[in-house]
Length: 135
Image 1 (spheres, helix red, strand yellow):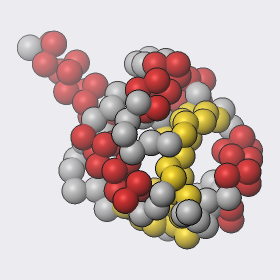
Image 2 (image 1 turned 135 degrees about the vertical axis):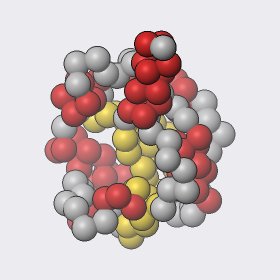
Image 3 (image 1 turned 90 degrees about the horizontal axis):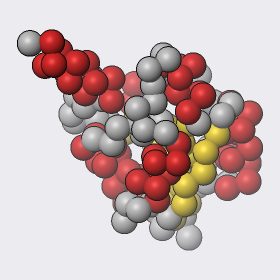
């Protein structure tokens, strides 16, 4: 059985997330999604985030057909601990991370960079929504 891991906030689920999740699952038999806690997202994205709390995000992600398991992490060390215990064969991460420091890479197995074919992002979705409301 090959084990795959992805991680992120997955605050407002969009087609880019679905494409990444389905791609990751296509590479193996078992997909674990590690979700950032609300506090971690707020720290990284700002006080107005996340839009959906961790319980909601976990429920949504757990109910996707491609996902076998969901865990959460609030720090780099907690994410590293997930990798150490899970022992993934592969980690799928966005190609925008190429050349950057990737937390837990030494425990990630093979790292696969996913090349997004869309321009979707939660931040862009929220900005577009706010801009439309201002018109």
